[in-house]
Length: 65
Image 1: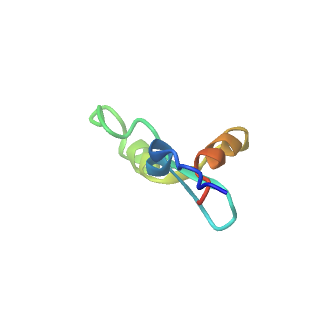
Image 2: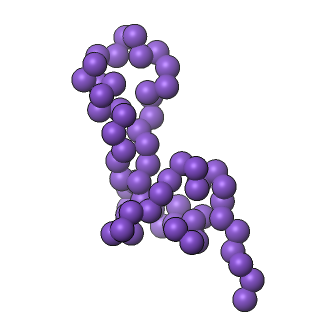
């Protein structure tokens, strides 16, 4: 049985936690932060979970995660 290639882009953006759920970083934190409130920027730093409708496709790209 041949090895399955991991999608390298997906491996840099997503990770799977112990429960099998997919983690991702929040968007909109990289630039234009001067107009955003401190509370908004603080919440954008935290990681969140991928929606279950997308998680199946992401797990397919990460076969060994």
